[in-house]
Length: 140
Length: 140
DNA sequence: GTGATTGCAAATCTTTTGCACTAAA
DNA sequence: TTTAGTGCAAAAGATTTGCAATCAC
Image 1 (tube, rainbow over the protein chains, first blue to last red):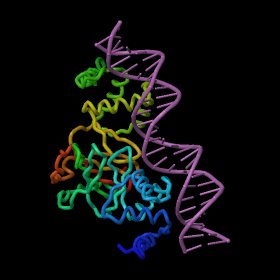
Image 2 (image 1 turned 90 degrees about the horizontal axis):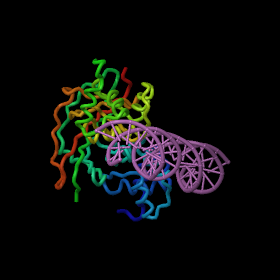
Image 3 (image 1 turned 90 degrees about the vertical axis):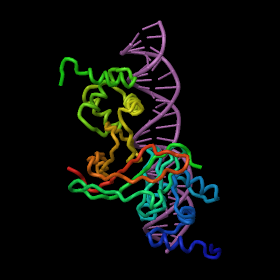
Image 4 (image 1 turned 45 degrees about the vertical axis):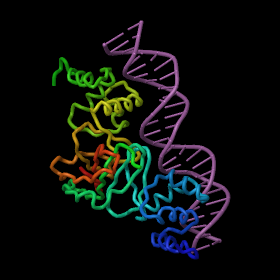
């Protein structure tokens, strides 16, 4: 978009979240936030970063994903017990999970009706509601 | 219930599922299916079995949980990326997940309204719909 | 400078696997 | 018998951690 100050927005975003805009965090944030909603695993993002020439370690990718999540820039989504997924869309929404390919995708906002929630058990509060529709058969 | 032939029902159930009723499978099935709906992790069931004096290995507990699931006697539920949970309730239903304690509980059938499902993407079919309500604050 | 961040390798944790041994039919 | 099932210990993955080196401010 802006070749002269390409990192300005990302830097501001990290600053607001109370995170120092280090080289690694900037590069990862750019990959994560520049192209709309994304669903990544640590390993996937790591590979992508390396391929893009970013020098970063896998441990830092894990740290960064957790820090971004804690700061409210992303959310962790649990769909597979063998891998963690992180979603850059922080608005309440739900997911299609393609079991065969392991891919995760947002359900369009009008795709799923409102959910009639039960009363939470006494002493508890609802923190989040996750709906995952597991799909068989491959997409595209 | 029946002291003379306490394993009859369980044996029949395993046979119907095409599983040989071995000592280990019988003992685990008894723990799992005798007291209504249960949600267990492998480690939890293993501990329970050992405490009950059942001689069984952790590997066999894993195998058994997967075999029971494949046979339709239980379902795997994904709520936590660090651990797998298995549910003895095979009827379509949804879950409360107590984030603080790691406990999983069924949402009463009338607690959650019917869910208006979206059209699955072309080439795919809906395999399962999971709703998890994450709760903060401890329950009893 | 100085405190936060990073990289690396080792450690941890859950789950799976290979294979000789045991038990069910 | 014969084949399925089991236990153990090792392997495999994903994720976390400890700590010295490096970077942002």
